[in-house]
Length: 282
Image: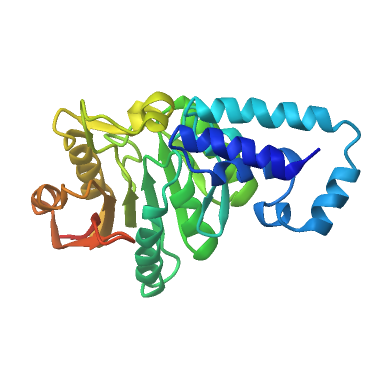
């Protein structure tokens, strides 16, 4: 099994389709049961290959995954894992792949939690895979986290991740519009669907990731409005909402927040684009 030749051929195909060549390394490492770094460690790689009785099967598995990637199936669906902060989140069809843009949002939430009397109650609206909920639960272990999700497909992944990573996260199936009646919390985090209906997305996103988690209505703000209303209902006075949005939506989101919230602030992502906002419940 000539690893360099296999990778060279795979990277060439990916490059021709304008897909990152590094994906070939991720896929090969996945089928070999290695990390991508181990793939470049000659000692580890040789020992792994010596332990494989039929290397043809490995090649077949790799090229099958490569064909799927060339068809723009998300890399994370193929490996079954998406990295988020210090976690490995299990993902697949039916759930949105966690984005690195959300990691700074979690930093802000954790800093706020640290300054509050413990334990702090946190509700994650539209939790999806559970990446945000689980990051909070593992990095602020005294917090009490509830993850809310209505999609049956996403709930499968949410429950799987909770069972593997932090069983103290409470999973609630329901619509944010009326879920958790009578509950009050200190913090709400939300990553609602906010893309305007009809906007064209990258092929791997548009063809494979769930549209219910992407599109926020005719203007993109209809579903964020529902999430903001839910947060206003759930939060204690002086409770904090942190909500993701599109880079061109911060002004509109601020207007929606101004009805029930004060101290509205927009925050940039890793490349300096306004990506999320925070606000304090009146």
